[in-house]
Amino acid sequence: MATTPILILLFIGYIIFTIDKKKENFPVPLILILVGIGLSFIPYFSSIEVTKDMIYHVFLPGLLFTSAYQFSPNALKKNAGIISFLATIGIMLTVLLLGWTIYVISGLFVSLSFVGSLLVASMLTPTDPVSVVSILKKSSGDKMMADVVEGESLINDGTSIVIFTVIVGIYLQDKTFSIGSFFGEFLLVSVGGVVVGLGFGWLFSKAIHITHHKEYQVMLSIILAYGIFNIAEHFGLSGVLATVFAGIMLSFEFNRSPTKTISVNHWTVSGAL
Image (tube, rainbow, N blue to C red; front, side, top):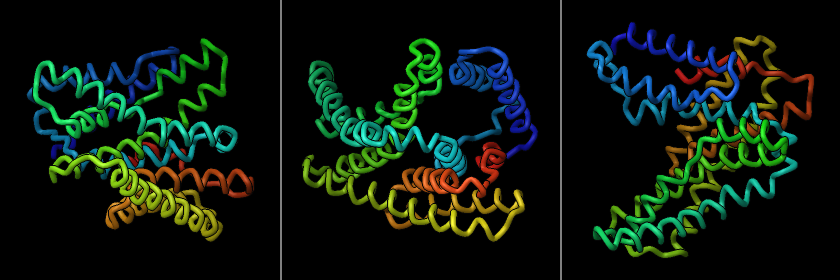
């Protein structure tokens, strides 16, 4: 893969995010999408191939870990109940209701099974709250609502992927959808990922005192983010939830002990690359 086009793309992204720092409510995600679509028509960038493995195994762990670590522990503790409900029961009810709606409406035009409808619904449930949270904080002044939306979306990324994975397995094996089997597999994959993430996050928080060099802390945090993701995935658990809850656990532990610090904020880009 050519290095120069990638550096140019990173520089373009830097410029767009710099503009976002200067102007409030600048729609960065939309601008990045439009720029990406425009650049796809330029032959110079045709050598760049973005694969699912690149997104899932290279970019995703670093971005999720950083977002989880930076989310306010106090806000998460205060709104833990509503965030947990919306990110689990709420999203499952959304998938079921949306899937049923798609199944009924699509029956008028194409032949789509109920499991297929649920699969489509599961792809539509993940949300990106960046713009929404910014608008909520400025327009309503309700910080709690903004914290709930942001916290729910953080966990939503993991539960959405788990739901999608479970439904894909049912769809490809041509099984009849069963609420019992769905919940059983969902709980195994999701709870397993959460437990692994919390466990390794706690161990890392206790081991961080071994070194006080920020460079080594960054290195260890990268190892934790990507290592826990791949360990969980290897055992058939949710790597996304494991990474998110490892970051959350670190944030909680360091919030309880102000003398402990970590330079996770400095590797948002390097960790994702």
